[in-house]
Length: 445
Image (tube, rainbow, N blue to C red):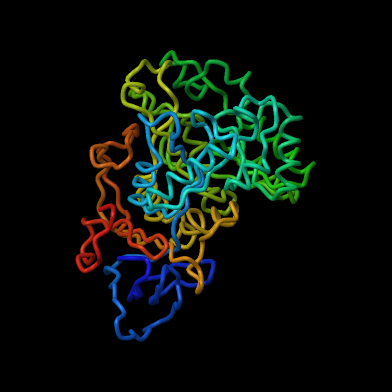
């Protein structure tokens, strides 16, 4: 289906919290734009009708505001093209990619390179995140204005914390003047040391060096204080402990513009998973104890957590085959996030569908100030069609990412993705979902 065609998505349950919709609606798309949303829309001559499969849910396009696409420089792990292929298969119409490429995305040239690669792929939208400091070394402020002009929507030194309080203050001040979001990987390097897992009984039993939760919590307290000083929005990447969530809640209560995200692996797994010595359980922040997981789920349910983001971090199999101490941190997540969220949060009754859409679409769009988050007339037709009851068995062999480093192999989950539409074009169609046979072939299926 070309972007210039007119079609109507018929008889789908539309969950669009930004517009207060949750019911059976039709959506008319023309030239890549939503032109009408209503019940029982008439079908003009020459208009294609796409029946939404029974039981499926139509939502604003999902946005993952924390991924690593690895290109340029680490194409053996992922490319922009393979990353956006994984994204649309995971239901995401847009992703924001971190700057820890090689070279680091601290210049307009690298930003433009990433955007050109995304345009060539023609699948999910890609929003580059620029480095906060030159080379992400924490020494010299990056050219934030240049990065914004080239297309960056935020700055971060992920996966390094912004090194000093003075530098963080300067980043917040300049970013605030330019209306650019600041995201920080919150971790005190001196407390982390050579730790590779959460510091606690499991680490001690396994003989692995630990990272205390306080390494994250202290850094978040620092950044929230500086965000208050500079009156600048600040976003906590991959928050993982109960103490960190308490700090965010307290900051919000004081009127500080702080938001945070939680990754699916942090609300699904605990540090008990380390007993396998599988390096696919090695991530940073590390897996935490059950009490932290319970606190994060509470925060996702009560609104304290703003976003679910995957922290999609692909690594080649040879790298993950090293010893636990030597293997790199990180797992892939683009193709499992929706299923894990449905299975562990929605179907357990912890959150409803509207809240799921807020966490995966509405809030990422609002925080990054990018297109999306609502199915509004006149808006680009970025749409996710989800299948809440689809039976999904996670298999690394079927994933579209170039890397397969994830700890969910063989998991049986309830809930998945039926189709993904970007700019009016059906870019992904799941052949396992009944009722999509009359839909046009997609670039990814």
